[in-house]
Amino acid sequence: MPPGAQRLSREDLSILALENETVAGHACKVIVLRGALDIDRLRASIAGRLHRAPRLRLRLREIGGVAWWVPDPELDLTAHVVRSAPAGAGDDDAFRAAVAAVFTQHLDRSRPLWRIDVLPGLAGGRSALIWRIHHALADGLTAMRMASEVLWDEHPGTAPRPARGHRRPAAAGPGTAAGSGLLADLRTAAREAPQPWLRSPFDGHIDARRSVAFAAAGLDALRDVSHATGGATVNDAVLTVVAGGLRRWLEAQHGHLGAVRVKVPVSLHGRGEQGSQAGNRDSFFCLDLPLSPADPVQRLAAIRQATKVRKQDHDAQHLDSLMRELAHVPGLSQFTEHVLAHPRSFALNVSNVPGPRQPVHVLGLPAEAMYSLAEIREHHALRIAVVSLAGTLNFGLVADPTLLPGVGQLAAGLQAEAAALAACLPPLT
Image (tube, rainbow, N blue to C red; front, top):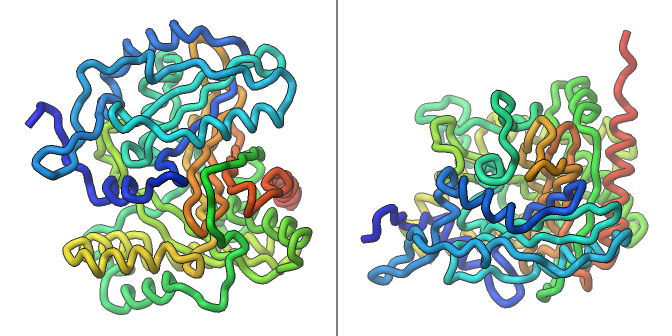
């Protein structure tokens, strides 16, 4: 066995199995920089720091009929850090089209499963990095740790830390009273079961094309209005913004104002893990986003109550334990995964990962924006990923352009809803 080899986890194998001709298995960070980036300097900088993120050296290899991660001692950074065609100066549509074109390209499975495309020629002399990392290699939290290790400029004593306010449910340990017992298992199963009365507006057969869109909101204002609303979290506010944006879009498209069910990933990474060496460790819960209330604070309060119940009952941890137990019964495990992925179980995935609290730079160039993009899947034609950077929440939307032609309109609705929610902050007394 090669030194440093790691057997793929259940999560890794499940993610790889999802990939096909129309679905890529990677997630993506789009980082917009003020200035033109020297690609040779970037390769040299990453090469000098790659030892801090050893998972970036891992590639797939089958040994004895079993899939393993094995270190690639001859990793060629010229194949992993590449120059893309200019996006077209001053043209936001061209920029989004260029990002979408890169996003649709599958990663080379004969190499470590990541690649950075350097996109020059943006308005104002800016450039962008499009960093694809296969989700089997790293989940969102691990990817952000990798960025700290190999990408952001180092400033002694001011290392980037996750943004405040992104509270995630802690993993439930053995014997946790609120999360243990048959009753809690049954409550979780009832909440996560498919709901036949809900129809997804994003259900359909997807193809390999993608469209992307972006939106942004002030983190501090959303945190403050959340705390003033029954102790809600930033993630509750994110879901409220998504609900409001969907309300606007559905009113314009379909006149539908019922509820849309979303899947909410939950990180189960432990505090003792070794930073960027950790791979995938997450679970999820699902909930209905209320679209009927026109008042964003009323929507926030309803979402706060729904997420509170799921956290108190440790739904994400129960689902993780269930899937690990079912892994010993392959037929039942596959059936359960199929049920949980059904469009009646959820319409779209909405993830939220904390990014750096402070501004970051790449080779001295300030990062003025950073967006996450995550892949859609069959019968789920929209996905929304959120990441924070230096006081801003950035929303990245990926859609099938045939099933959802108005993704730009939806992104504009999210931005308007974020402003509307922030405006509800009670005045200081």
